[in-house]
Length: 465
Image (cartoon, rainbow, N blue to C red; front, side, top):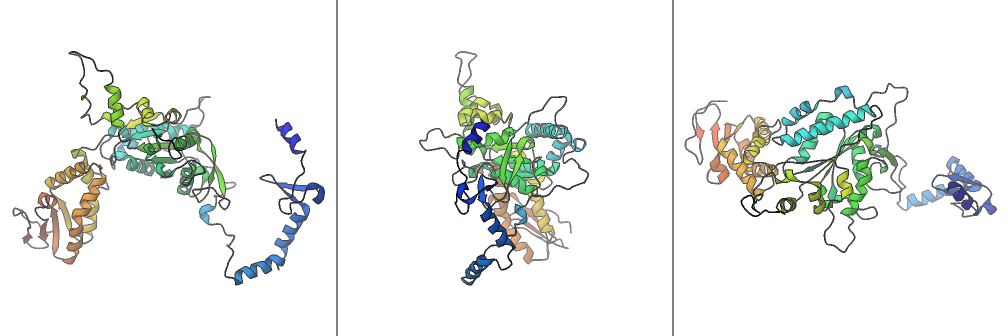
């Protein structure tokens, strides 16, 4: 086939890319990449122009452009568009050392310090990540090539999907890129190409290709690229994006723009092999519960052994019963699901779990406010009843743990504004009445037994700070 192609090419004359003369007119051509031909005269003129200190006509042209207020850009390439060089004659150290990979139970223990609940999800992700990096560091084992185990996380908004991945990357100390599937479109349309997710990972690895090829990519809102059920227009942000992601998930060499999210003539390109990049996809998948319930209640028996149609209406863990069939009906194509072999669901946060989120993790929201007020030498406390009320309000908003921050920001605004005015304030206690809007926080003064109580008279004894 290649011989035939060369034979066909020999039948036509080459044309100079600059002067547009044919080979018979200009003589033998010089071939450069991208199938560009340049005659010897044009090549010599280019060298003369570069070596001429006065730059000839080019210099006059530049002077005219500068006088008119137009300045040509400098040839300096920013660092974000440069690829790091490999160190020569240096002892190569593996980026991922199999002896330093934490065991699954250690990964889970560290996740427990930051993420409340979701024990099953943390166990699944710990084992999957451990096996993945064993595969990366060991390579082919006894002629057995272990395939990559990409993951798909399903869970309601605010259940901790993104936070789980961020904490995981921090524990493993590997490059992490978090991207949003809603910005991805088919190549040629306005939006980011699928290769842009690799550009973000390369930037996170400080443009070190070898380091980026061992990183983690988390694609959030993956449910937003589901195949549109009823549309007559071209689905450039749905099924087409799923098809574009197939080669990345499977493992292939992809040309990636450096320092940008789109390909153009001004951006340098590099090649990244996605074989050892771990892809984790996550999404809320709204209305997937209806699809699962429809499958579970499709065959209802009649009689004493029959099941009621509303059996799964109040099941809080209905997403844990998801199958590939349900996801296909939702709009995910089979080829895409086949490249995400590990599918697991996160549970919706209960009231007790939300209270734990408020006060137990290392960077809990309450601890953050306590640290801020401690800089003003003020002790911030929360009554247990107040915490329960905040958790209940968060459940009503149906946005998971994100609602906790919004609620606290609302009630802490006046406190953060008023407290720095008075240096004599020693302690502030958030009460249930304040959260319910029928009272105010309990203020205790520094260095005395005087207690300022607003909205609650039984403040109790004050111990000086």
